[in-house]
Structure formats: C-alpha cells, structure tokens
Image 1: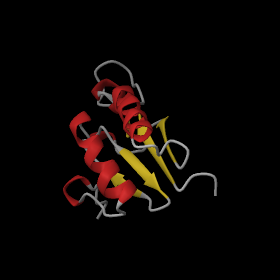
Image 2: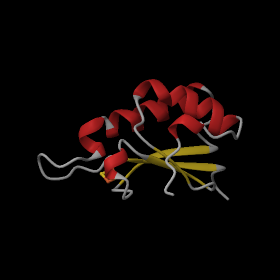
Image 3: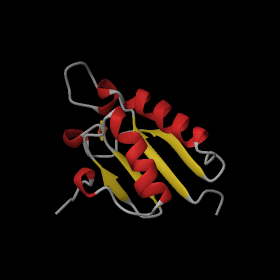
Image 4: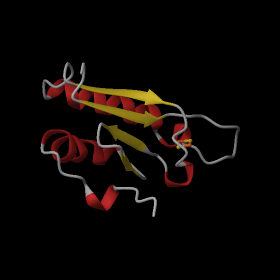
Length: 102
Ligand code: FES
C-alpha cells in the first residue's frame, strides 16, 4: 500500500446558495491538513487531498479517512491538528466529530 492512510476532504462547490463544503472552507481544510502532515514529517505516509461531494453535504465540511472509512462532520480549521494527532497518529477516532450514519 502506498499510503498508510488517505484523507479525502470534500471541497465540492455547488450552485450558489446550496449547502456545500467548498463554500465552508473545503480548500482551506485541504491546505491545512497538508501543512500539518508536512510539519509532522508524515507527508510520504499519509495523503490528504481534495475530493468531490462525499454525500454528506448537510454535515459539512466533511471528510473521510481510509482505510478505516471514518467520516468526520462539521470540520473546522481548528480541528485539523486534533484529527491528525488522534486519528492519524494514535489511531483513535475523534468521537465528537465522527459522523455516524445510523
Ligand atoms: S458538498 Fe461536501 S459532502 Fe456534499
């Protein structure tokens, strides 16, 4: 496997007025994840990248981390460091940000 984990961050832009992650810092989140991973020397093992709609628009900004397939909702720039520390490095879900589909 090339990457140990893959973080897909929705940066989808919908028509004006419709809820979407792109209007809610989607690209800023992508850049922040990349910066934090680089700062921690993880860029070659963990990949963060923009994604299209993850079908979680009303919970956005949204992202999903594989191989676990864990979705996170309403992510703010200030949450990025915690997600990297907890989920990416320590393999512990950040429970208050997890999107449960049930
Ligand atoms: S626009 Fe981001 S999940 Fe649909």
